[in-house]
Every structure is written in C-alpha cells, then in structure tokens.
Length: 362
Image 1 (spheres, rainbow, N blue to C red):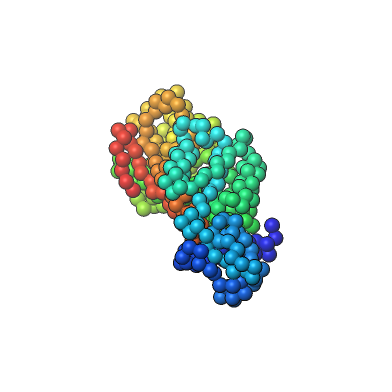
Image 2: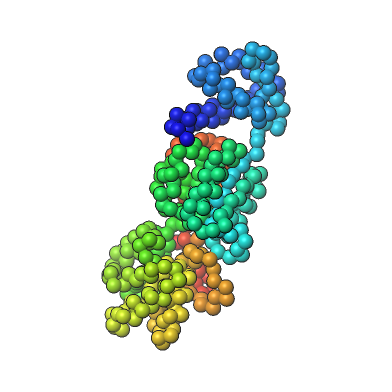
C-alpha cells in the first residue's frame, strides 16, 4: 500500500464521516447540494467527493436524484450500518475453558453483543508469529471490517508494521509503543508494588523477584518491584533476581534459591506468574522447604493458562481481563465513530487475592 494511496483512503474516510453528519440533519429524501457546490463547501476535489458518495450510495444512505449529480437521503431510519470488528486471538483460545485469554474473549463478545457489533473472530492453527501476521493482514485488508482487536502473543515490533493500514487497531496485553495505536494493558508496575506492599505488611524484609529470561522479561513489572523496595527502604540484591530460561523450566529458580546460604536467603518471592510459583514451590518442597513458613510466594494470576487440579493456594495479583475485553470494544467503537490520530493507553488496575479469597484493592 503506497503512502499516497493510504492518504487518499484516509481523506475519503474522513469525508464520509462529514457527509454522514450532514445526512443526519436532513429530512428523508431531502436533496443535497449539487456536486460542484458540495465539493467547494467541503474543500475537496470533485473526484474525492465522488469516491465518498459512491461508498455512501453502496450503504443505502443516498441515491442518485438526477443526472447532474444531485443526491438525496434515503431510508434515514436504516442509515447506520452495523459496526464490524475483527478479533485476532491466540491459538485455540475460544475452545479453552480457562486462562486469561478466554476471559478477554468473553469480554469482547459480550460487549460486542451489547453494542450490536458484528464480530469476525480469527485464530491461527499454530502458535507462530508468521501465522498470526498472515491472518491479521487479512483482517486489515478486509474493507468490510471497521477495526481490529488483537489479543495474542506477538512481536513487539508488530504495532509499527501495522501503521501502513489506515484502520483502527487495539492491542490487549501488548508492550508496543506506537502512539497512534490503542492499548488495553494490565498495570504490571502497580501489580508488583501491590505484591511488595502486601509482603512488607506481613513482616518480610528480604524479598526476591522471579522472572523468565530477558526474552520474556516484563520491564514494567520488574521496575515496579524495584521502586517498591526503594519506597520501603529495602535492598535489591542482583542475586535475588532469579531467572528461568522458559515457562516449563521454572524449577531452576528453586535451585538458584537453594544455592544461597540459608541465612542469606530471601523470605519471600514475587513470581512472574502463578504457573511459575507452582513449579518453584513443588521443586522446593522436595528439598524440605515449607511454604509459607520458610518462604512465602506471591504470583500473578492468569499470565498463562490456569493449571487443572491446582492444589497450591497462594496469594496472587489478579487483573479483570473480562473488563479489558469490554474496554477494547468500547475504545474501538469510539474511535470508529470519532476518528483520531493519537492512540490511548488504558490500564487495568491490580487486586490481590489471598488464599481465603479476600480481595484487597490497590
């Protein structure tokens, strides 16, 4: 798609919005100005105006009144077309009964139903960045789709690659930084601060952080942890920043903990996810470490799919992912109806759920 083509398309779309606003002020079948006069009023060329009018005629909003280019409003009560949103999901999300992506999907679907939006759901058959991109590009190329919501594991560079399309895009749980895109994010920074504050209130002074490798590192979550330690006048030791190479090998963190002399070990850990916390706990229990008597761990609920038959009950930081899905739909509709160049960043606030299921707000 060329830059000129993208600019022309954007101008036509903006012009359509202007004309639709004029149509809503007219009575049914009332005539619009002649083509030449209307183009002058709108400050556009005749050719650009014709492109916009052709789209509106296809929608049933106007009809050709006579041969010299005068148009009239038609069937005003049925003029507004149904908004059509694309939704790109991680592989098999819709079929899963658990996990945060499932909650996102439910939130999107429920709000789309409330807002009378049509939802086009797409999901690759394999968990691969190339497969995600191919399906996403198809959604963006579909002229019948007004905007796209993306909730899948994808490259941080993806938002930049999507700027060539003049179509509203909203990312859910993505670390992109393109200012023209909309993002619905968990407030990971505040989540880490809440976890540290919770542990300090429980008397802990030596608190460690457990994360995956740099490839999966959530910088906001780590920064929130470090700043919270500073606020509580607690030290941050690099040897207490435990790391696992990937999701399924989090038990190596248990060994990193055991390698520290008993008197120097932290008494609590903030873990990247509940999945990670469970693997650490199971590994430590084999070495006689009692949870939470010897070591207390706080996880982040829903960072990965929930595990079946999970019998380990620990405090967890939680986010309302159902609400995130609802906000994504509301944000898309608002942007489609009122086009803007600048994107929005909306953060979902954290809460902590204790083993007795009592919630504490941040």
